[in-house]
Length: 269
Image (cartoon, rainbow, N blue to C red; front, side, top):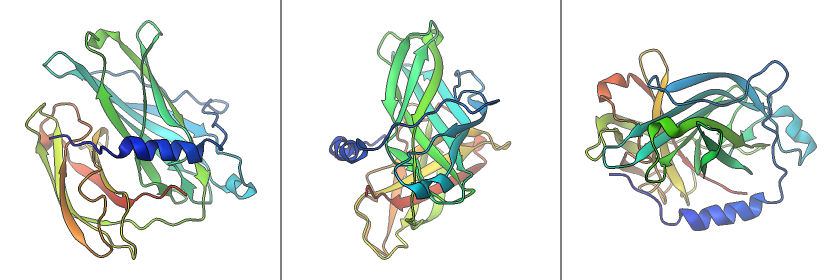
C-alpha cells in the first residue's frame, strides 16, 4: 500500500523558508534546445533534448556546476475508481565540474490541459541522489491524481521548474540489497521491496529510498519512493522496506528489466 510521510508538510515548510533567499532559476532552453515538456501517451516515457537548468548565482564557485534535464517520463491513466492518476520522472545530469545539490530552491512542475489552461501543479519532495557529482544522473520522482471529473483527453503537457546550487558537500550512498519488484494489490502498479543499509557514520534524520524502473530498452517506466521506513535509520544499521508510493501505471512486473536504487539521508543546509 502507498504510504505518505505525515511530517512532510512541516519539513517542506521549513525547507521553503530556507530556500526563499535563493534566486529562482531560468529553465528557458539554451539556443538550439527544446523545452523540457512532455505530453502523456500510451508509450509512457517522453525523451527530450537536453535543457539547461540555470544555477542559483549565490556564490562565485557555483559557476562550475551545470545541471540540465535530459529525459522526461510522464504518464497518466484511469485508476478504475473514478480518478485519473499520473506519474512523472525527470532525469537530469550534472555536466559541470562541481557537485550540485538538486534539492534546492524551486522543485515544482505545471501540468497543462489540452486547451492550454493549467490543469494541475505540484512539487517534488524527493530526488535521487540529492547531490550530483560531475557527470552523474539524477531523478526527480513525483505523482498524484487529478481532480475528480478529469478525463484522460483533458491532460496536456508537463513543464518543470527546477533549481540547484553548487556544493562542496558529499552524500553517502546507502547500500540497497535484495531488491524485488512485484505488483501492488490496490491499483496494479509496481511495488518494490528490499533492504537498505546506512553505510554512513551518522544516524539518518530524514532517510529515504528511491527506485527508478527501466524496461529492456532502458526507457523509464516509473519510480517508487519509501519515505517512511528508513527515516531514522542508524549509522551502520539495516532495515527492510516495501513501498508503491507515489504510484506507477499498472504494469506487469516482468516488464521491469533494470532498476536504479538509491538510499540516502537528506540534508537541508
